[in-house]
Length: 113
Image 1 (cartoon, rainbow, N blue to C red):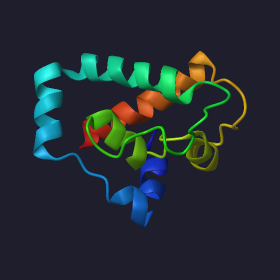
Image 2: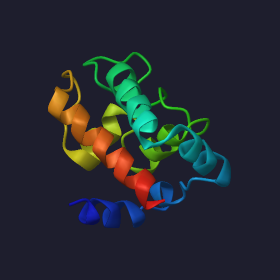
Image 3: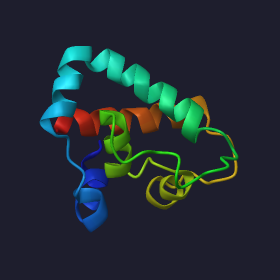
Image 4: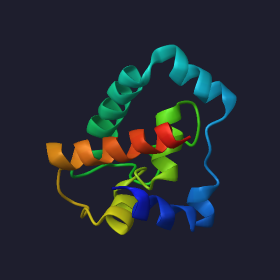
């Protein structure tokens, strides 16, 4: 289902440079995928889902959590990237279905790492 998206992302010089390091992989193993997914849901709901984000484009750190790294790798880091790569327009609050889709993309990328 995500193969075409990940193929396009892998052709992006910027997106393809993001990889999970041993530290992040150990964190995922320690916490478990359910907890990581819970973190992803929380980050998307609070940092990405609102219609207006004052610091859009700068709200997602480039490191510090496996989900942050995955967000950049999958173009789920800001509303501009989400609009460009996932065809979900800026300026309106994300539906629960859209949030679920973005979380699933993040989790699929993490599993593939």
